[in-house]
Length: 249
Ligand code: PEP
Image (cartoon, rainbow, N blue to C red; front, side, top):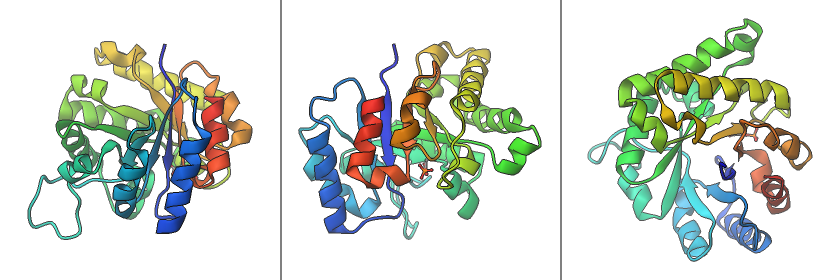
């Protein structure tokens, strides 16, 4: 039995005051929700606030990116060790916005995963196809390439130390959600792909779905056998919506 994980990806949103009231709202509204693991991945500048407010609660803190390097002359970068020191449990790696706007390749993403794992945190690896790729019928080829690149760089055992989020690029922030059946098909493919590499972990690992998850569609998505939680963008910015999705898990 895989415990569902619902992780909020705030992206580059919120003020300090807004962040404080959102985290408080999530803490208060999630009391007694033990079935689902809950995490909030906040902008770097709110990590200290998150660490302070979430200390002593079951809600996990996460970041949205990390440097490929351990330390040194990398202006503007944040290392995995720094994130660990600020109480992060999760780090989103390879989000499609980073792949698209900041040119992150599979090789870069693999290095980030290794950094996060070696610093004692869990990466959330995002994979997913664009609309064009889906229409060309190459969804599985794209996902296989993204997963295989990590296995080739970091080894099959590294897969047991990460969470995977399937996020079809065409569903992120667009209001278009993959149907539960479409998402299930890709989640099952990911599990099969990992198993084919000899990964005994395939059945145990969590695969989250992300892409316009809302309170109205969360229960149907989360009811699918291979969907083990969600990575939530827009709806994680409103405590009531995020909590309603957590409840659906
Ligand atoms: C995301 O960016 O990870 C995401 C799933 O966004 P949204 O829920 O807004 O589509």
